[in-house]
Image 1 (cartoon, helix red, strand yellow):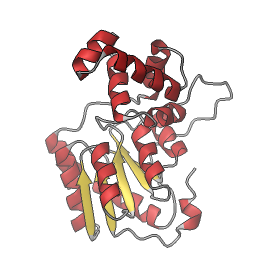
Image 2 (cartoon, helix red, strand yellow; image 1 turned 90 degrees about the vertical axis):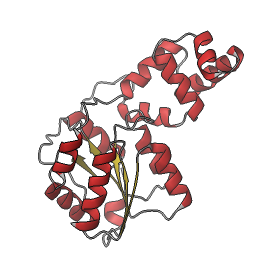
Image 3 (cartoon, rainbow, N blue to C red; image 1 turned 90 degrees about the horizontal axis):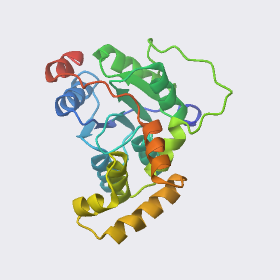
Image 4 (cartoon, helix red, strand yellow; image 1 turned 60 degrees about the horizontal axis):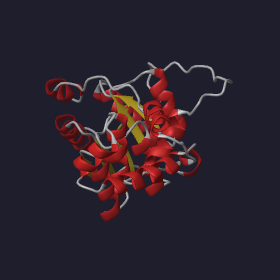
Length: 241
């Protein structure tokens, strides 16, 4: 869990990074943060890769608004990569999937808040206000479930952490493995030797803590959160207007 609540009681956001692959929603969110909430500096990127570059080349933002449905991340793997880069940086998750399981997974991972993507602008304001006070924000729709004592094969958080450890090339190969592609086809699509693919697979299986391709695919599937269809371009702007 993040210790942000106890350590940053006087937090005030003047610089926010928005990470969302939906360009219009991203622009609308950035515009709302600048105009309605008077945030001095708002930057936006459309991928996890873009977020990592922004964090690597510029000052660390006071807060990150992170969409879970990024094309270059699986489940919470993007969240863990950002936290690994800047451990004390608070992250508020935004997602089109506002199921209790997804909210619980994000908060257990250490998110400072969760905002459903179809929430009106007032909810964004409430979330920002609570985070600035050092509190964690949960949407009114959330109904926590009792903890299960039975052992799960691998939790969403653990699976996402393992996936976050993969290199970009290993993640690409893992996507092709999950799609059922044999080594020869993977080698052709990546323009590398089949022996190179086998070496990558051996390394990624080790990083994922599994012994074969089937177990790897199951692990990736366990980290994949439900992803409803994105908001339409019109709705993306309407929700924040």
